[in-house]
Length: 356
Ligand code: SF4
Image (cartoon, rainbow, N blue to C red; front, side, top):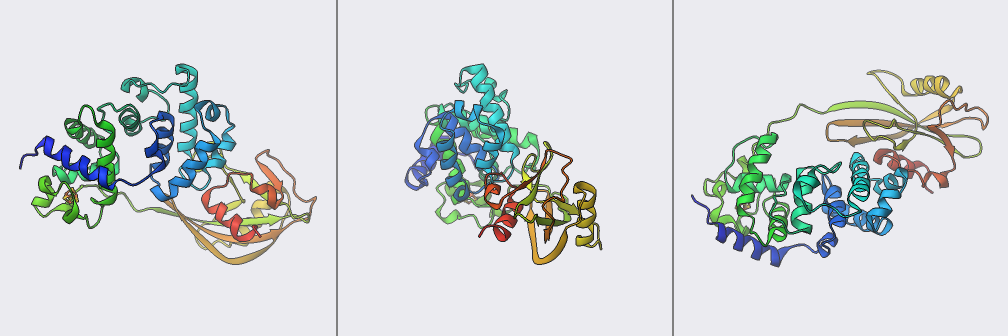
């Protein structure tokens, strides 16, 4: 089966014109806004991203605004979106563009790839969507569509398969229509060529899809299985003093959820008693033992590689009891807690137990 390039482009672009969703970042060619939207859309659903995107560009309308904002404020605007290293890298990349390129995002592909936090996908998206340059932008959706269309049986978890698919897609990008073409392939992956039960009966590319011709749509893309997720069990302590202030701490500056705020929590080994472990932790860290009450609440939070199970305890200490040894620990009123960027599971705990 050969693929007629012109027929594929025409069918795809006509379908896109008629079916594309009305998304806020599609109303702009501002490369900074495209950059923000593409970073937010990595690993996050479109519906979730829309309000975050709108608030973010209202809060940081120019690259100068984002570059000079304190990191805490950027994390706060990102609170709940997850994968916080994305926000940090975005801000660092924007700072680099402000300092090195006078706040003009390079329209040279090689130069753009050197900017902090800009990988092949983001660079391709900015080059094509904002600057209409014929550069592929290959994300998970595009890999799936291409693997099916061309029956590519290589493992898409491998970097060389991504490069292979970039090369295949590059062949089909129209010289003067890269912006719409790349977005059309992504949109087709999101709306029609879904991971499960692709809607081939309404697909504009069904006429040239090799996987469909072979009746093997569900066999593509080929992806090696990752090892099972690790599961960690924690006891979380929401501890107030007599003045109603709540004890919080800041996570380390690197690693998972770096720099975000949370209630103290202790990793439990199998069979360990949560209340006892929390008490011992408080004694060692804050020089006091809170009176603790278990709650019925156990939250599960799933990361890409890890699951947390969190048993929540409520506790009380005297106003003078807590001795801080680190500037990363604070006592704050419930109202003031809202100013802090919490990780998603701890945000949930804050809402459940402290928001009235
Ligand atoms: S025909 Fe089916 S498998 Fe092929 S691209 Fe369209 S939706 Fe995907």
